[in-house]
Length: 124
Image 1 (cartoon, one colour):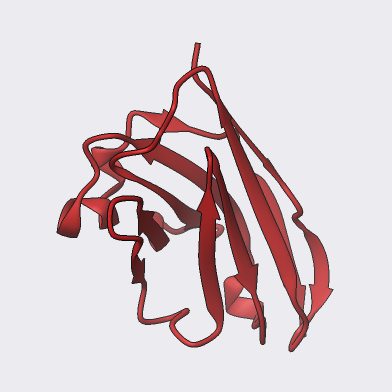
Image 2 (tube, rainbow, N blue to C red):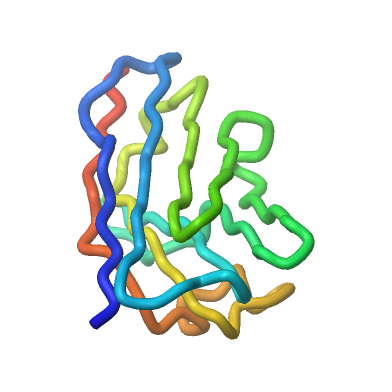
């Protein structure tokens, strides 16, 4: 059984930093991608960042580019979040799928495996 477990969320002031971690077990994700999505209150789930393992290709949403960094390997993915803003407040979800490539890595529907979500709150 595949499990993705996120950690590292919490409350931070605007301008601060947090680092999210996601550890996958039950399957090796050495192909495809692992990514981060988020859902803010009253909004749809949106893409944040993804890492495509073959070639270490990185993808970012425009809203986080230059502030967030995705990294990882060996079934673990991290999201370093700097210069946090109140609008980054959301539940963040880790996702993984061996068929996630290219533009598909930005789409929630691509991913079969999801974590339970972890809350990030940025106060102004």
